Length: 306
Length: 238
Ligand SMILES: Nc1ncnc2c1ncn2[C@@H]1O[C@H](COP(=O)(O)OP(=O)(O)O)[C@@H](O)[C@H]1O
Ligand SMILES: [Mg+2]
Image (cartoon, rainbow over all chains, first blue to last red; front, side, top):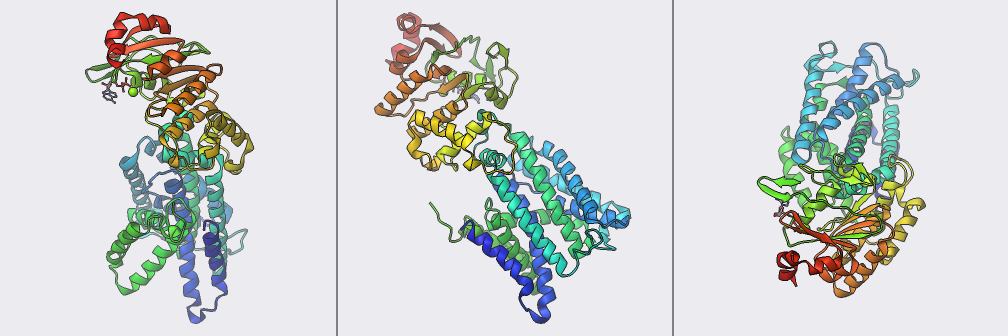
């Protein structure tokens, strides 16, 4: 299950551009691109939540950090991918190290509230960037390019997002299985035991927050390019909540569950959004039902129980 | 010294544990034995007093740094990693002493450098047959054995054990006593235990705690003969 489901999921994503959807083709590619962007963000959050037991309620801040790295460089006529990535990753790493060092002094509900508060700070800071659209957000002049090559236009976006998602997923799998990831998983189970063995949970968890933040900022870079827009709204608590829902609905700790959860949430949002603008009213009860009946999340359906 | 509000839980306790010896701590329930072990290992901070390890002051080091210096412990309430396999529990303890844990790429589960010492520690406590099982499936007695294997895998200088025989059946007790006896040559052991037969069989030195105070300390024979100890503890227990 642990190999087959992600294999099928990525095979399906790889096949989408080759399926003739006719006139709907462009729309489908856009929608699935959106799924992949949020899947990357959700997988990075699963590294914290499923891997390290850290319930970060402010992960969307990194979407905004990535998006504003694109926007701010764009306003200064820079759209080279390496520069954009360096800015996005650097800013995300700094933000994660600074806020993580504070948030990790707390646990449980306090950790949730502090990560939320830091994300709200990003939201208000982005809204105050008058040179970059303030509350209204910023429309990109040009999409990010790789050595002047438009890798994020049309089908190129789909291909790039697919490659980054696959790379992000494999990276997280590797991290979770490594020495580092093993300590991270152990802290979630029994923090005191891990300390008594001689590990410092703080440095391990902080490192995880930095890695997850950087990965999510890559999703933010993609999101800004997909919508050709950077908005303070990328950092709202609703968005952070959506990411948590994707991970929990998909089954925290499995990584590919976050991918399934992202697909489910984005597609359902699209479908319900067509029916009614109050789609969250339908979505809420659905979520409660799924948590009650699918304990292991979407990734746990059909998986062996003991 | 440790206070919880007005309750003085450990008061002027002075213990020395020598390499290669077992130092037992006995005393009635609520005497402060677990509190004392918590203070030595660094789980709770002392309000006064010092803890020295091999002559170095470790009083202000956090739990994980004391562990690095060679202090390993078992818990009165068994404390293992329930989702990990038995082997992985011990391999993680090996990992704490074997190079950096900031390695991000190679899978840890197949590292022979971690698994071989882990298997050896499991064999030592007689748990190698359960190596592949998740730790949560172990019986209470087996979890105790696993705790010992985790502690041993760290090759500690001092091993702190809080009632390792509690809840063990007669066969298990006999096996654990033999094991503890053999561990003496690897490290110094501080043994908190209610099983008097085991304590008198194993200990080189016995210290008696009552209401947070050390009321006697000496060899097994001296303690057996001590009148104060008999009234405070042995009298009501035996
Ligand atoms: N965290 C705590 N807060 C308040 N009192 C405590 C705490 N931990 C232990 N005590 C009290 O300290 C005393 C000693 O407890 P403990 O060290 O567990 O004794 P023992 O292990 O010898 O049975 C008991 O009276 C207990 O109620
Ligand atoms: Mg106790």
